[in-house]
Image 1: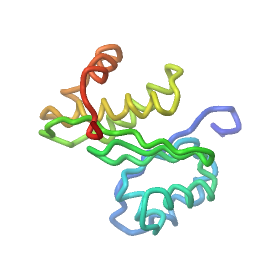
Image 2 (image 1 turned 120 degrees about the vertical axis):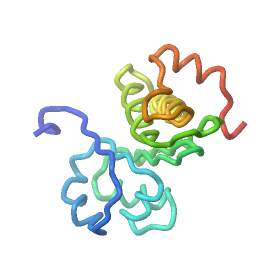
Image 3 (image 1 turned 90 degrees about the vertical axis):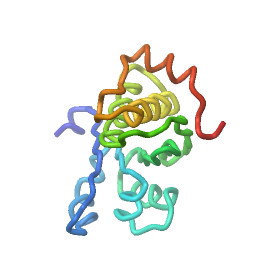
Amino acid sequence: RAVKAGWTTSLDTGHDTRGEWMAVLEPCLENIGLLFANEAEALKISGRPDARSAARLLLGLGVKTVVIKRGRNGCAVFDGEKEIWAQGFAVEPLDTTGAGDCFTGGFLAGLHRGGTFLDAARLGNACGALSASRIGSVSGLLGYQDTLEWAARHRTNGG
């Protein structure tokens, strides 16, 4: 119903302890605008050996955009036409609990504010890094403008 109403949908996967990855997800895939998965989840879901081939499989099954969270290495965004590999930020991780969720929230906030996929990826990476840099899942987070300023001042893991 959400898709028919013109809404953008998103799904952030979680670890499947039962091994039912595709049995559960496949019926939903054609209705997912943005699928978020960490790299290990993407490989398990798809049965593919790398992020690119995992994303291609998921796109072929109807997902509009696949975002693969790569931890300290940032993220990769695939939409069928292009792919974006955005570097993560260099921080000393103290607690990674919730960092992936903070990444997803930052990515969606970036899109909601009119950003491109690259803008959203950079904001998501900053939110994930900020989360991991403090004890507690959200204690390191900053407001939107402060996060942008933090990202502008900090180097990525790529340089």
